[in-house]
Length: 248
Image 1 (cartoon, rainbow, N blue to C red):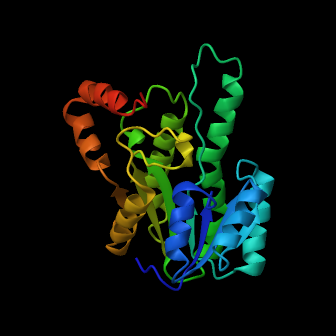
Image 2 (image 1 turned 180 degrees about the vertical axis):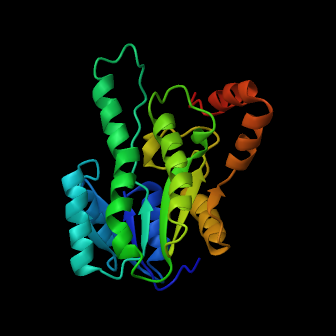
């Protein structure tokens, strides 16, 4: 995959892994980001003047449509979509009175938004060379973390969707890539990351190396080991992961 002279849209690009990816790619590409917080988007613009941004909530279909209209008018050369935006709730399913609202929110942002944007942007992406859809998932697609009642399931669903999409789009000039990250030390963890978390710099380094090699299902850090463990000893993998991801 060519990583220069592209126009890349990164959802959730104003913080965490999305921001780190934007910083790397903007050196040799045009980078566009979107997010819900105008304050964060404007701060990112101050840090990276070359970047373009559009404020929207990708959990809302109409706002996804507005984003794609903005792309089609202002950046019709866009050839790479990175579905990175995601949220999670650390919650107890039975005890949390607002748990169903949280479930809907996670499903909309983590799963339906990537599906919606992929559908809406394919006609634009495929008009340009080196077209790609890159879906960001997690090692938790293989084994769930018990304090995330919905995040694991949404990422597992996105993993499954990505596999199907790759096959269904095989006759179109667009590659479909999945990047599975381990725990990464980002603002996601509110200053209390798991002991096994790696740095955003290290995570993105490995991602870019493997993208250049043309890998379509990219496992970052120890995700490959986790995958092997789930095949060989699923109960042990479940127990071990939930011990290691403890922040205590």
